[in-house]
Length: 524
Image (tube, rainbow, N blue to C red; front, side, top):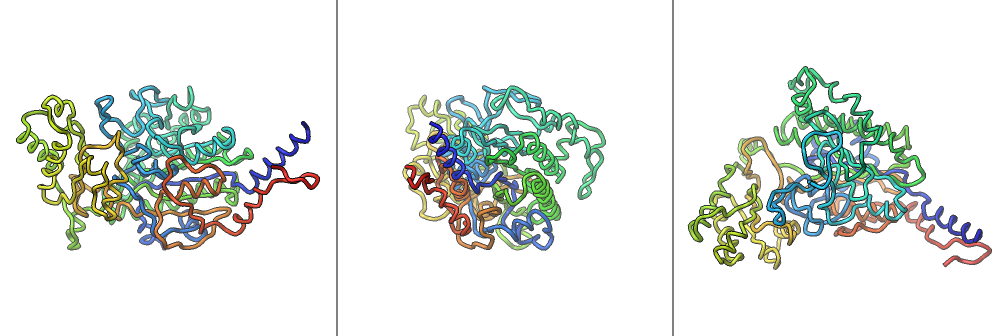
């Protein structure tokens, strides 16, 4: 028995040798790839380290539609397309309950340290993440933590088995979580909230925006639209590392951090505004601060970092028009109203559309049944009505997507990749490039490259630094990490392993798969 135990321990030590102590997975919300180029000379800290020491992919894209926060964050560490993951948007109409749900809403759990009703969890995510596979591989010894301003951005990358996901409640200034993870917040998180970190920004100024002078919801909501929110995320991430002893327990842990403030700022002013330049530079600084902290706690030589964004963003239409570029605004409600009117004309009165959005329409199935209509025919009528609106470029019915009847081009395939049979809409609509159904500022969601082209950078032990110009998908991140960590590839992954970034040291490290010997005999 003793001999067998010794052999098992020897094999275990070989299997875990050379693994990183920590995986740091960073998402910057709405960080277009070209921000790396536009502001390169002004990056001096975290982003600079990534660009000089990392494996930088210059042509990484999302291969799905819509390019929105929930879908990007779910793809990052699962490698799964929405058609498989079930995360088809930030929110969608749920036919089982007859109401609109978010990607993480969960009425079976409660919010901890927050306000309002309704909980949040990863229960709508149908696939595993790298963190899930890591914990299943080592008997739940690894710890996985997610941190962001947004609930979906903390929950979806960290997965089902995470030890905690934390996000910011702008109504009370706390970082909150849900009873899905634990009965009460960990002590370290409660201590952070007790210090009222967001209150430090009372009266602060950024780019001529002055924060309210009093603590409360007005201050906390104002902070979201500044780099101060990213500073809060970084501060909380430091507390999570200390509180959970991440990277200090002899196993590989995973910390997923999503910096959300860039998205709030970008929606308001667009990618060409000075505010975006400034917050990008400040994001470089805040990431550098996190790297410096981890170097002191874990040693950056023991940390694998992977960096990306969840989507890009379109230029502000008026800015594009001034440049004599295409683009403009389709008034919100125009497309939806045209579809409703066309269905009333052909089939009679009724509330034909039950979903709130305009890029994906869910039709009233009860009404279709009551009128004894063919669902596919109604869908086709709706699609034709949408296509009659100027600047609507394509309209697909669920029947077309189920049968793969799309144009054999990049846009068609990305739209089909976003369609989930059970959760998908009846009609999907796409405006022409640079056109928005958005009244102010700008937005994202399209399969065009300004929304789909994002950074992907790996840095750390076993990673070969350099520039890699071949096309890849963000879906490739998860299987690459799984291979590096020697765990199962996440269950819905559609990507490939980016083996070109592995160093010779990593390759030679695979010799630890060889069976250990004792007394000249191999162990099988």
